[in-house]
Image 1: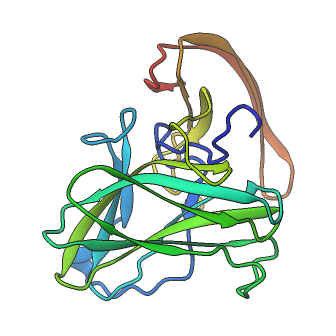
Image 2: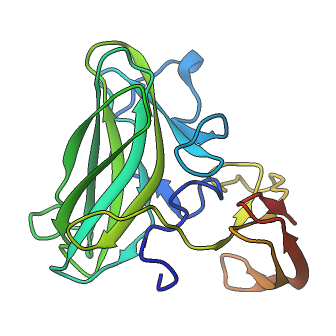
Length: 239
């Protein structure tokens, strides 16, 4: 986290959904024909870099929201959250931020102050400032649709930094993540995973990765190492 003033990891989705998760509190009503991922990586449009997050929104539903992994913070310190977003909705659509701090208690002393934003059809940057409720927090994004049945929201370049104003978007220069055939990396026993490491970097670089794999009983089942070389510009390298 000390490598960048932006403490959100993988903030521009250049390494797909690494360091992002699903918020479990949700309400979904869908038929089999509507089944599918509620948010995916989109390489056709971006406010920064090569990718953005594509969020499917349905009227009067609170789908599983994308949420950051736990972020270290300084309790009571002032932070500014900023992000780029747009929608294909013909009328303004609300994107709401929410979250919670250490302990996971849904009470006033651990809730992250949220805010609602009206999105347009063009990429724009939105922000707000808050005081961290604890030493650890996470941020979730939920879309609200009132005037039509289905819409899409794109999210990109999420930044959380100390201070009362946002600065130019920045992100750590290097990411490594585990990639499998499933976006959520969750499998039934016996399913093939086709696991690989996905590496992206801002500048061309090379190095060695050493890894160990443990099962649910904490027994080591595999280990190894490999060399890698990246092209830079956050072009992904899969090994």
